[in-house]
Image (cartoon, rainbow, N blue to C red; front, top):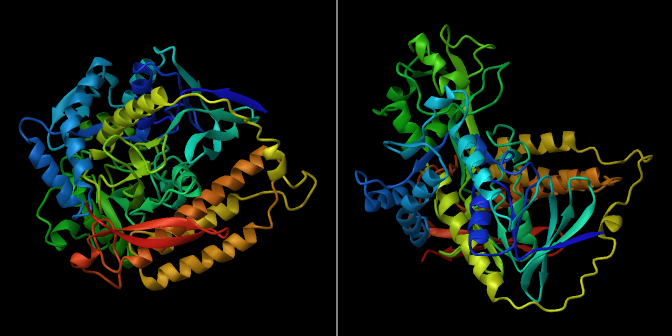
Length: 533
């Protein structure tokens, strides 16, 4: 079995992971960045529109903090929010030094200027490409794309690396003095989502298994405007929405006006996306919701973001198209300090895998900003930890761990075929832990999960590919169970979290975090409530 060593190991090749790797290398540490997809290109960062909610002279730091806390409905970690707001401008300057063309555009702050690209590419892709180019300049950064992390390793209560499979499906152990977890969220567990399909919550499962709790897992943000027209690919509708755009119910009524929302659709998408996702979901139950671009000048369809619509498959100028919410972003995750530290020595985290910054809901544009700010901080902290850690002679024999896990043969009828099972789990997530939940749906979902788990236990892995597929199902199962378990405990509606049976926001007794910890061999989750700082 191949064995590699580094000083700082970064798990995840998106914006947070790349920023952490660059900062670690800047601090002189040998750094390795692994990703189960091509570095950068398999992350949600590359799918982003390219907006950064960064305080400007006009908006001011205090106003940015105030708005972030308001949208988070009181559950944000205020120290993390303060750090995000105060360090954001520094990261914008960093991007500019890389050659990212940013323009000031209220209400976000800054967006990637796409004029030179003729509106045919997303801003997130531009940012990621520039970050990759920068990372390749550092000799101290080693890249391992298409590497699947199977398990994190701990020694003497400190993280010491990972085991997994390289792009040739060979088992490999990676030892390091510190680790940064930057694996992103878990939107891919839902039937309707705008994430890359393999974004299944790997980091959440890895963290739980080494004893870390997860916080706020009930808070999943659903982006309200997702294409749902039969025959068209499932994707989010990028902002800004064009002049003349209308949102209609099944009878052709103006939906925002119907509910007394006297705001533009773009303002709603930035500041009221939770409420709009809920309304669209409920209206779809009655007959459907449609986006109408028929009043939009034809010339606008040659410019971003209309230029990236599937115009060859549907004539958006002639008739409205059906829309529905999409699972978009996880507010919950691993708890970190201002420097990106977790509760386990040597382990740091950044980006969507962490919780606390956004509280019960996220303000548009804060996700990319968070990746930069806390990616930099976690990379710096991981480098400092690695620098201080003295090397000890270690015995690192892990034996034939893949051989123990691969128990089937290719001739057996019960080899691992989990595509159908994964789709069943995605449907279950949407139906029971989607935009609107209830005690009945959640209990039904947990019961169905147990049945699915028992059926799944009969499958045998006959190859490394089978083993990885099995592991991804186990991760999806764990993440969905965490969402449902937390959702049952929170008996109110708050931010992105909506319960039919508790439609109102609760009192002070609910201004607490729900923390989950893995217990026992059966994958049980222990629930506890934590007071805010």
